[in-house]
Length: 65
Length: 260
Image: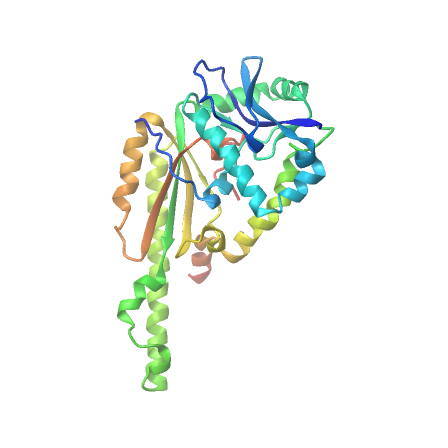
């Protein structure tokens, strides 16, 4: 299958992948930018608002039973 | 102006040329840096934007983040047409070329292992949404306030609650079955956190947000399998995204299925 159909990608789908995915390599330690934590911590604000408001429905269902 | 190196992906060396007009973050031309049988695809970025502190500040700015994420994705998408790139985390920056080389040297074994794992594969995203409103609207023409009596009101409320409970239960088993089915067709899977409707602007509640690593040759069958489930269940919606580069399968602890 040649699967190269390109549509505008939804930002939220992209952020799922760019912020929670992608290889984390040890970066230039003098600068510490590629450091794991930097990107994670700064974007946690965005991501954690997701988790607080939209908990995993699987868990919710478990609680209800 | 001091410039840093923003690295998008690591690939095996590839022959095919990238499209000539392809640029990276901030419109800078792309470069390839080869070391030890690995190629880092990078562009120069200003330290004024990508140094430690400015980057910290920028990452809080959704417009900046959007532009950067889109530029990153454009490079990865272009690479996907000529090779099977291993995407790096957004905002991976090095001081200079020798910093990039050091990374390729130090992380080489792990990078080669990851490249082998995703070789010949693409990532598909599958999301399931439950839409309780869409489900209930027809069976409940009168608003609660118009109930004839208190007892009617309570009955109505109970019926509505039971309907919602049934939908969640159905959504749960549907999503789990679909995930199991798709997992059997995938080389690897990863569950992302359900999406925030404020960010996605999607209607309904996101129940499943899965990523599936699938061989290119198995992709058609995979997509058909997902398409068949669409409109299968009232009140539930299935969405397919992709093909993506293997963003969600770049964790060396690949056995860990959940991303959160």
